[in-house]
Amino acid sequence: MKRLTYILLLLLLSVTTRGQTLIGYEYWFDTDFPSKVYIAHTQSDISFDADISTFHQGMHYITFRVKDDKGKWSTPLTQYFYRTSSDNGADNSLTSYEYWL
Image (cartoon, rainbow, N blue to C red; front, side, top):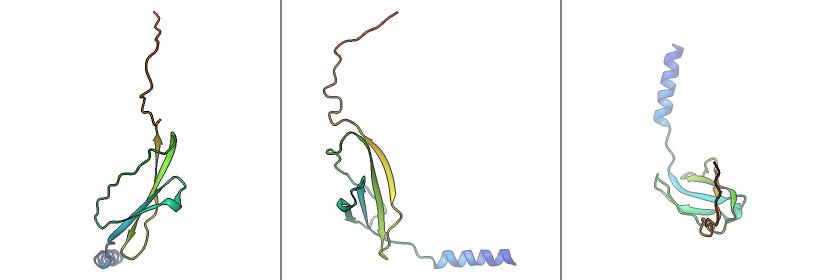
């Protein structure tokens, strides 16, 4: 009987639970929360370009979260990335080499 009660409770919960609707998202880099970028967006797929050309070489991170139609924010998701040198190897050229047997 307990098993049937749990199954009915789960079924009722799944029927009455309403999914959230996305209304926007925001992101910021490193600890620069005051410069966060907010985008009003209602599609389920999210894609954006961010300019990181002014970042110094090294480790950085982006933090991202979404907002639903009830005004609630998701848990922030942080992803780390490494910014390579800004010259992209343009000044690197072979000046000498060495080999041995």
